[in-house]
Length: 159
Image 1 (cartoon, one colour):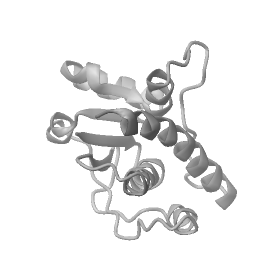
Image 2 (image 1 turned 120 degrees about the horizontal axis):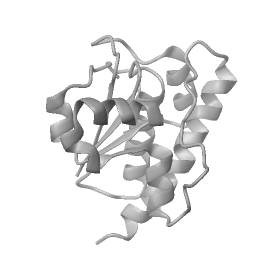
Image 3 (image 1 turned 45 degrees about the vertical axis):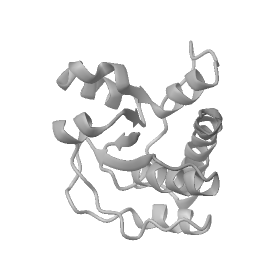
């Protein structure tokens, strides 16, 4: 299975989600899942944000080698599951690549669905910490991790 995380620039949220999920998969001994990330408006090759690197480093997760990628049809086509950080990003991808709509969700939406939680009326966006204080990056990473742990719990029970 190939899981793709998408945000705007692929330097904060999606790069953190990629690093956190790789860490959680290893921690849970779950194999055969490839994790990557890309951005809707990425500067190809840009490093992960310094605050994102520092936040994850405190959790024992290293994303220093991360390089931003621009989202394209090839990347989307190779992905089995695409998890966006906002509903707007999800809608943009579906607008340009409607044939892939069945595999595109927001991260929080997918976490709720996999746990049979009602998503109606919920804010399914993860706020962009870019340009904000370090503590916002910590909160964003925590929110990403909480939702990924919900998904991991489900992946771990599938045989």
